[in-house]
Length: 157
Image (cartoon, rainbow, N blue to C red):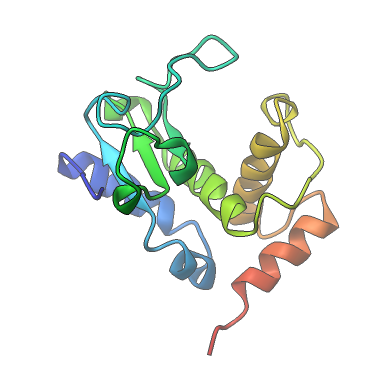
């Protein structure tokens, strides 16, 4: 569902992707984006409320294929959902959500130490936050995370 509704989203997505090292970026290139429309109505989830009180209707998030039960199986793909207004989003948000997609690619198998208060929410947020740290600074506070991300970034020739 590659639905990007205006150039502001394209620029934002590009600004996020360029922060991700090239080989990891290549692995994430086929992740779909859905912007500017109501994600639950479009079938990108069935649960409206996030445990912290926000709504999936207007919060940037990664909608995993296994949560898209309203869509035919042939249309279910992990999708980054970016709500309006786009001005509330930053490249860091894009990298964070792509971190969730990467976490799915590795089977949700890795638990990393939380690097901030938001990362203490659960293992998914800890993974996405430490991925952001690695993309921005080239290393993290968790040696296991550094090893995983560096292995993912190895040349794929």
